Length: 265
Image (cartoon, rainbow, N blue to C red; front, side, top):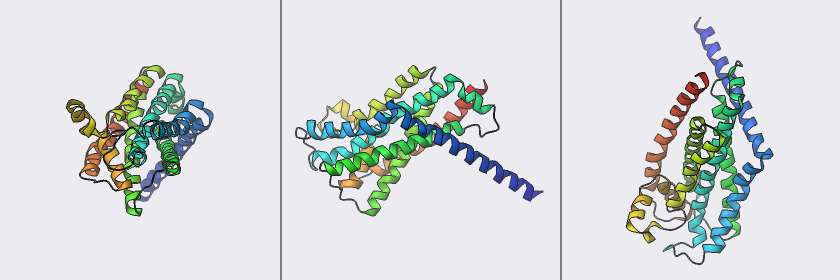
């Protein structure tokens, strides 16, 4: 009896994984077929890096590293944030056009649609980050990180990508339509600009600096920058974890709950 129950649980888990793989492939295909997603995942990060490297690079004093070394971490975080729009719009579109109802009428894992969007968003962000770092090295980025620092930066980035992806998915679920989802996601797009992504917070007015220093994007940017180019790390890595681990867990749970209520309601 116990063996039968265990076999059934393994079978159910296997079916859930298979459903998630199918929905992940479905979401990834949109990257190659949707011009907007190609621009957001590939062209936009490249344009941002070249813009800040050559237009502002000679005018901003970072107080230490060269601007191209300073700004790489900021462009990476900006690229991840920009992907939130595509994720939120994709989720809202699935809910609006009825595909979710068709999926849920089938014998499939109920939340595989959400998993598909989140995982494909993370993979899309990984591609963007690789492009930014690779192009950055071409235009003057010179990291000093060893293997341990690269792994730590990669782990922190994956955590951040997953949290942003779940946040964007939540926005897509609660939005009333595609346009609303796009508008909500712009909050995530613009918040990194009010961080230390592009300029040191020390150069900002006191009120703005207080906001910049204590908002969740700043410790991620600072921690990645420190790991890659050797600036003082301080407590930035711990603060990034304090912010983004709870954001990831709570947002994922809330997204599943709201999605379940909306699709059954």
